[in-house]
Image (cartoon, rainbow, N blue to C red):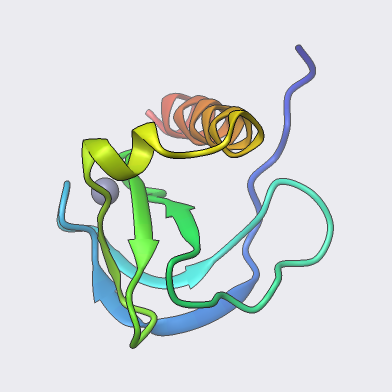
Length: 94
Ligand SMILES: [Zn+2]
């Protein structure tokens, strides 16, 4: 699988990852332009690689196992790709 880079992009309201405590104030994407986040959009923490979801104020919160299980196969695939890229990135930082 080709390596994909994680880059910086769009600012979001200041929040904190409920998994690792990492400050979340920007989002990024693996390819192309970063879309403006909407409530219920998913993202992945750059600190720990866990999946997060935006609430109504665009602050991040944990997704439940039920919510993750309800993803479409395409969403689940994208999520896995994103998590793999972030975990590669984190591994390269240490
Ligand atoms: Zn985290």
